[in-house]
Image (cartoon, rainbow, N blue to C red):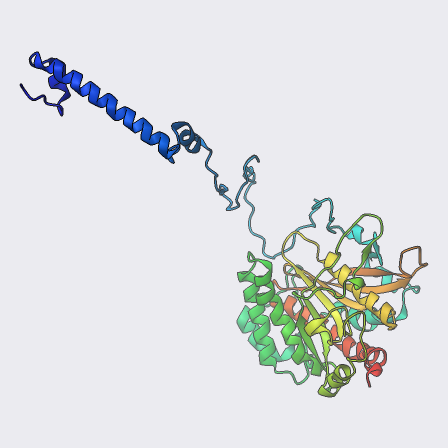
Length: 444
C-alpha cells in the first residue's frame, strides 16, 4: 500500500491512485475522534479565557482618548469647541518713541465672581472711591492737609523747570550730545545749583543715563521686566536723596510690595449692590519711613499685648511689611489695564485701617500711576459723608492726574526725581509727625 502524503494537500486533490480513498476514510474517522475528545476536554475546563471575536472587536473599535490639540498660539484647545480664530491682521504701525499703556479693557470676567475693571465700579463699593481733576484740591471745602500737600509741596515741584543739576551739565551734554532738548516744545534745559545737596552726583548721573537706555531697550518687554529695569532704579535712588531734603537723622525706604495683599480682608472695600467678591488688590511700590532700631523695638515689644484686627500691624498689610510706616503708593502698568483700580482699592484699605484704629483721617496719600514711560501724580484723601445703612461714614476721593515726568529722555527722568523729592520731603516733614503722634506714641 502506498503511504499517503498528508503534508501535501495538492497530492490528494489531484488523486494519485485508488488507494487514496481508503486513507481518506481513515483520516476522517480519526479527525472526528480528535474533535469529539477536544469538545469533551473544553467542556471540563469551562469557557476559554481568550476573549471571543466579538469582544476583541469591541475593544479594538473603542474610541481612543485624544490629548488636547495645540493651537498655533500654544494654548491647548478642548474637544467640542470651535478652534480659536486667528487675530485679524491690522495694518502695520510705526513703533512709537515712548511706551504708553492702552486704555482700560471694557469686557467683564465671570458672572458669579465679578472683577472690578472700571473706575466707576469703585463708586459702588463701601467705602466708595471716586475720581476728579486736580482742581478739586484747590477748593476751600477740601481738607486743609490735602491743600498743604498740593500747594506747599507738589505744585511747586511740578511747575518747576530748573530740575537738572548744574554740576552735571558738562557730563550730560557729552552723554546726550549738545544741544540738549526736551521732548515737545524745543527749549534748552534749565539747570540749577544745589538741587541734591551733598548727594554723590556721579550716582545720580549713572541712574539717569541707565534708566533712559533701559527704557529704550525694554519697551516691548513684559511688566516685571519693565519694573525691574526702568522703575526700580529710580525708586532705589530716593533713599540716598532723603538727606538732601530733610532731617539728616531720618531716612526713607522704597519697598517692593508687588507680592503683598491687603490684610486682614476686613480692610478691603466691600460690595454694596453688585456682588463684587474678594476686592483685594496689590500695588508695586510704597515709600515708607526707615525706622530707627529704637523705634522698631518700641513697636515690636508690645505686640503680644497689642493685637489689632487678628494680627499685629501698623498698616493695611501683615507679615514682613506689617511694621513699615507707608506714606505713598505706586502702581505700574504696561498693558491695557488701569493702574488706578489697584491704587483706589489700596488707598481705601489705608483709610479703613485708620478708621478702625482711631488714627486721624485727614492726612492724604500721595499716589503715583505709571503707565509705560509716563508717570502721573494723584492725591487720595477721605471725605466725611452721612453713613447709610451698611455703609461707611466716609468716602475716598482721588484727584489727578498731573504729569510728573517720563522716561523717554534724561530731562524727563530728572523731572521725575525732582517730583519724588517733594513727596519724600512731605513724608519727612508732615507724615513723620503724624506717625509719631498716631502710631508710635501707643507703644512707647
